[in-house]
Amino acid sequence: MNEIALDTFFLHPGFVFVSREPFLISTVLGSCVSICVWDEAKHFGGINHFVYSHPQKKEIGGQYGSISIPYLFHLMNGLGANKADLRVHIVGGAQNPDLNSYIGDTNVQIAEEWLETRRIKVVSRDTGGQIGRKVVFNNQTGEVWVYKIQHIRKADWYDISNF
Image (cartoon, rainbow, N blue to C red; front, side):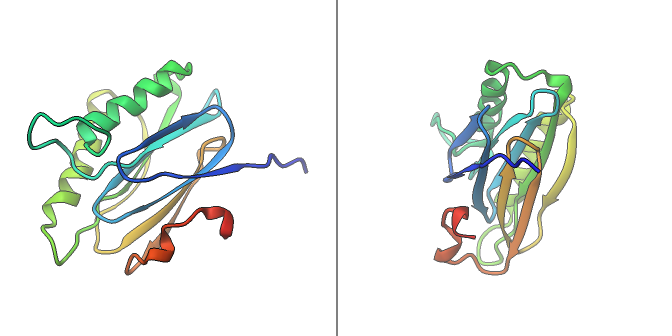
């Protein structure tokens, strides 16, 4: 069997990553949300990691879903993705019992509403609850692995090449 060697990339909060090149992209989520999007016909994809649904003031940046989500799809479109061929996974939005659970809920809500309005197919959701997640996304196959983590530790913030 011929296997393609995949580079790895760790996605930090507030960033978006899209590539036609093969990557295993990882990130760690608590109340944050990631959308993993894959073009089923062209076999490439991308992922975002946003912290809040909307800015409180006139701020801009990838940490806000209202900015990050359209930008992710803009980048996919720029590389030739066709909306009809897109498959999406929504991950994250956990509730932190020590903080206001409103953040995770609104992060999931903005993702679902944005995708539904544009009729983009969501193939899986792993959202809510009270535990964090480590996400690994293969942007060539569209596969997503979600590792549930009770307490996010400093060691969870590392490159997956160390698995």
